[in-house]
Image (cartoon, rainbow, N blue to C red; front, top):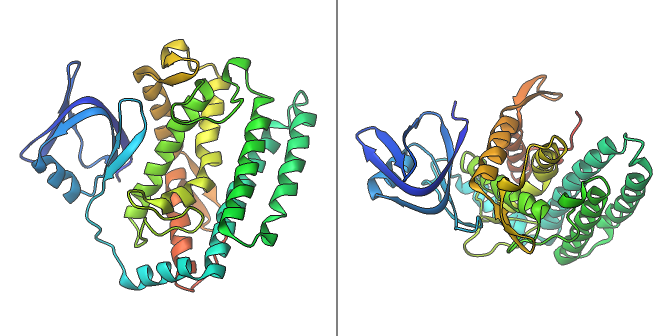
Length: 332
């Protein structure tokens, strides 16, 4: 089973018969096509049409990030699982205001449920108990307003306030040098914003890779507005998994002192992950996606990556009218 995520930096890909290899100034290595799930390309990556064709044939997407680490786009293989019936129903759920708001609300509920799970986990520490409980109460007070909203922008405003309160709560337990203070993106202005931006990009592209392996159309979304040049359904589903995967990875990296100053480049106000930092993060990310838990519904162990696919299957069933969608909230 394909399970590995490869990060490639400033080099070129070549194909020779049934082999693809990557080379830059520091290394030359063969890529095990049968194991690659996705490729993350940073900086300048050169390749021939033969390489693109071969990767696409094997269902391997390439996600491109520029020199600064910002996501720019994906080489998305030709869809082989497309279903006209599902696409029609997926579109109708977007066009029907009530159906769209239902799904948008569920994505927020799932994200909020997992955010609260994280905060309750850390609130078990007596040192942070009172502060985090205050934030938990404020977040719960926001989420009860969701059924009263009459538009998607209003829902997005609630989601934004929830996320803001969450980051304020995390600042109560983070070391000073890793405090978020204010969420910034382009460019991230401190270490924590850098980690969040990098992790969220990984999450977005991982969800996109999983959508590719279903019959869902990645451009038709419900919480985030569909736009040209982005796969907005990935943004919707990522909201559920960022607290489960990305935030927990970041807290582990920080709490276990797995990062040092050499993991970052730039300075406060304009900071990005270094090559060393990316490799450490990506290793933890691969490990997390491969970690298994006992699924209470299936009564067997599944990986975190498989949880994403299962969430997409649930969404497909809802769209087809088979089973009402309920978002994943951590039970472990």
